[in-house]
Length: 84
Image (cartoon, rainbow, N blue to C red; front, side, top):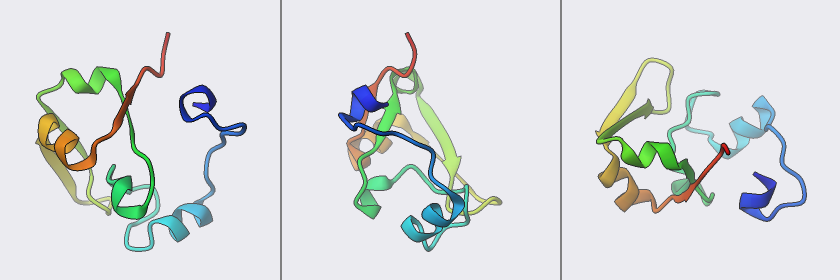
């Protein structure tokens, strides 16, 4: 991730950091719409081959299922390879 983001340091965020960044979501259930929160969004290249994707909708009891092409159109994620 350091290489992908160009950052000198990459670490997992604490629960408190998540709560501050996503105040309207349950901790650990943030949807991948970082663009709505002023954050860059990265997606694994392998997900781009899926017709549909599913993810948390801000809570641990609700999910969103949508066409990948719609997600890409709305979010404009940066496609990266997380594995070699």
